[in-house]
Image (cartoon, rainbow, N blue to C red; front, side, top):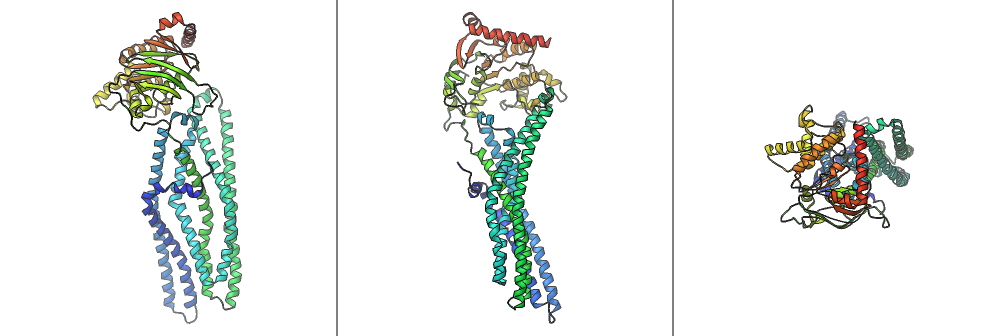
Length: 596
């Protein structure tokens, strides 16, 4: 699909602009009135020259003209003030509405979308692009239309004074129009490239801030700086191209009217000497040209602003047009007797952007986990364990087969209900810049205060996260961005407490104890045995001690379930399982040696 036209892009603003259209219309009328008043003043000057400034003129008429010009000036200022009052508030509200709608859409889009998009790109689309829209809507759009109407009205007044002078001024618009055609295409391309590069630069900054510990630890500050400087220079070069393109266009917009004005001066003086034009009409012509100078010069900037806003809107709608491929069905189903029975039947998975020839990551997965059972999922690195866990709460969609909870395919569940039923603790812990209390209770059910406190304390104690009570403000301590003020083990325990506090029927644990020392892991495991007594649990295990938590073990090998049984049964009959467990024991031994 090609690049949408300016008209097509702006037409999509219709549903958002419609509620605020009355105020925008009043703002437009005020701006238009101010422009017309500005053109009225030269006509007063023409009357003053023709009827007052001569030997028989009346002094009172001079003061009348002065008062009239002063009154018109005050009225123009009032209309400019009213224009701002009418348009600023609704434009800001529209910006907020579109920003909130954008954020809501981001929350609904599948994880696969966020895997492809840089966070800086999404940030620039939600912030700077929509700020451009607000400024254009409150100023650029109105003034572009008003300037156009003002110039046309001014030309009519010029033609009414002298068709020759009007024609001379109008002829100057021909090269500007031709130049504007080429300017539009060049500037639009440069503007889009600039905004995309700004998004990439924002991504680079965000990644560097989040990964500052890694950068410092490996001494790669200079390398990251060089890469950022290269990106910044690319953005600078693009901005210079934009500025040069706009500057060359403004050269035409400013110089051509001045040249035509000089030609008009010569022609006007000749017409006056021939008696075909009064002195007052000549004065009005040049006063009108002076009034038009601002709108004519400003139209170049306004056109550039419009094209920049157009590309910003294209970028915004590019995200908004991305379909949400993982959504609640029209008529969701709910189990009559929810127990947490988890089944996978013939499940396959390949990433949405994978080629048709690529092998599926998961192939014909069949598992049956009865309510209240804890199953460990083990396998070598890259066997597909974490990917399988993502299919249960529909973070990814299975390419084939069924994932069922209590006999209902997860695709038939309401998403909110499904994710209330299933809680997840990931190995790569994500915490938010809020208090520990808010992080732990993020997915918890709404309860009275006393019950909520009891639930919070149970989750904290089960996850062995009692360290949080010793922080400066206890559980109300606000942790830094992504919880980086805490250690890796502390973050994992808070994330595990969050999953426990959700009180799910199905608990998905993606190696949640990997950053804990063995003694802490034993304490957590002991408490989990009690807390998870009635919860169906699927846990990815990278330690033999974690496998011991499970009632049964599923061995995943190259995307296929190789065997299912108890830990003892698999040790006895499966060579690959023994190899995997031996590998896990070696990793655990290495960890203990490092701790020692």
